Image (tube, rainbow, N blue to C red; front, side, top):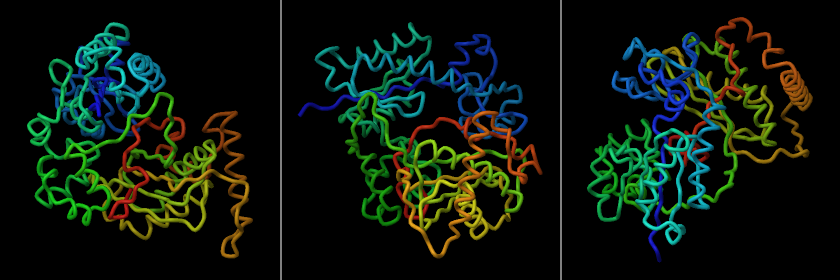
Length: 424
């Protein structure tokens, strides 16, 4: 069987690079693409080289970025532009393979295995793609080349000076295993802490750790990342045009000021849950697993979920479950800075709804009609044409539109998979 050849291609600091391409003068100042500076919404999504040298980190809050670089210029994201230019880049990839799988806007895997007889040497082709993207679009990309998706992604993250890094079955122990375990795809901060508590600091440590112990401690996630560390990923690169099924719908935001009680948080979650419910209806879906995530002022994350007796896409019912989770699970000893919610366990919404003697069907129907009316009004007159009364008490806190302004992020491998600690 012919060994696979997988490219992972990453547009370098994508959003920031597109802004620099549009406005070349931005290359002369430390600049980052992020949320609303005055309202403290969002995080650093991308930064240019000058901001990176000043210590600005992708994913940190705007306040933290400003502390590292007081002169940092923060540009609000322009997703229509990013979608347009990254689409042009991926059109180039598609000239070389029928299997191009997006991972967010700025990254993609390309299965080059079946294209070798057409284009020849994979490394020369990778260099040709890099040159074409720069010549035709004006953007630079890094390419990782390997026999599986995980190590190809690791290669593109190396940012080799040549722009191309090759991970083979002969060199992966030398190139991949010495790296910190956090450099392995899908090992986030929480997983990294769990691994370090077991003396696992590098990807090599993870590869050599007994998989049965990882599975017992972390469930399916432990088993999967062990396979990844050992180069055993065999997942396919999807065909062009493939759209993965929606597994969850959610929204999150960073608040303009910290909140230390559930009652003040309710209006914020009203806005979030309305957006989630509206997006579910647009997709023709409903779900029965409600998840809530919050980040404290100390930047610690807390997550909890519960399953409903019946699926829903009604904002009032989603909000009720979210607030119940918060009120029974979070003490508010530490004020909250960022909040989020999501609905998973999705199925197509049907016309048939099983009635229940334990629930108020009239209340459900009234809430559903209110959602429908609000969506209709907002669709015709704009998002702020109609609002719940509670959301105007603290306008700065609730003046955001999560449905239209939500960020486009890659879909995680573990999305919809239940971890051993109950989180997703």
